[in-house]
Length: 117
Image 1 (cartoon, rainbow, N blue to C red):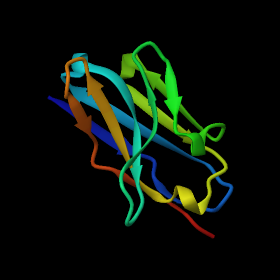
Image 2 (image 1 turned 180 degrees about the vertical axis):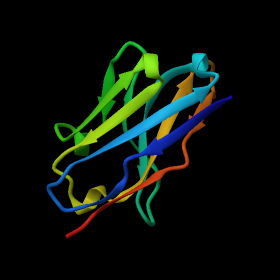
Image 3 (image 1 turned 45 degrees about the horizontal axis):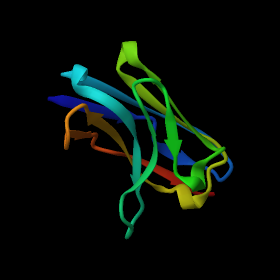
């Protein structure tokens, strides 16, 4: 199994920045891509961005140019650097990992990000 633990959430003012971290443990050899989803109150969970094992990234349109995903494979860690945050970015952010096999998915418990003045 794979365990994912997020950290770095909190309260930030509009225009501010936060950096989320996610550390994977357990059977990390199962992991291919890693990334982040988010879920705002009353809304469906949505993909924020993802990074493959070779470093290729993909982001949802609304965060392009503001958010950056990076990964340290040796530390089994993925980061989400969030800049120019707006209240619309308020959500619970979940770390995600996709395994090499079909249907293999792993989720963290989530970390709250609140953007408010």
